[in-house]
Length: 241
Image (cartoon, rainbow, N blue to C red):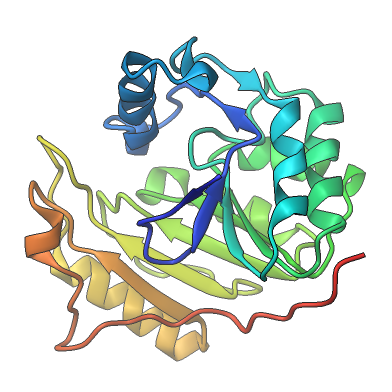
């Protein structure tokens, strides 16, 4: 568990770590880079670097939080990776089910497996499910997500490395857009972002602009159309069980 610098969440929780690359958006994976740093620092959880690992002990952590949190689940992994057993995914979901006072944001690139398993899982109101879509080649992930039983469904269009015209935003509640950062970031065209923002406005979908990215993402900022966009779905919380 850690406080997060990610603009659209408060903290991260990683019951699994590790992943591998499956599409163009993975090219400069920040989690892989961070995992190497943590391994070099001697952090036990990352002793195997970016190999897929499950962490049973991490399942206890959300029960210790005193106040309601907005939590990004698996910032250092993908919960729906093929190497993560369904039984463990169910354990993660049980923790989220048992803590309705928190919002859990789950994000995957493996939308096919998500759809395959979604009826095996309990989708309580506080689980937000999203897919990453970096360009048109992987737009089909949205169609898989649309069929999921989550109350809130969202898209992370980051790193946005190509235009996404004519998005089907039916049953989508939230769209996050961000440019790539790092040493060799691929450029994001402002017209792509403006087009997506206009699509969201037309379809009454919450729009969150995370960053322009670049080598110095802080300097590039997150101003679009002369303002920041921090829209999010309404958070509905209940008491813990």
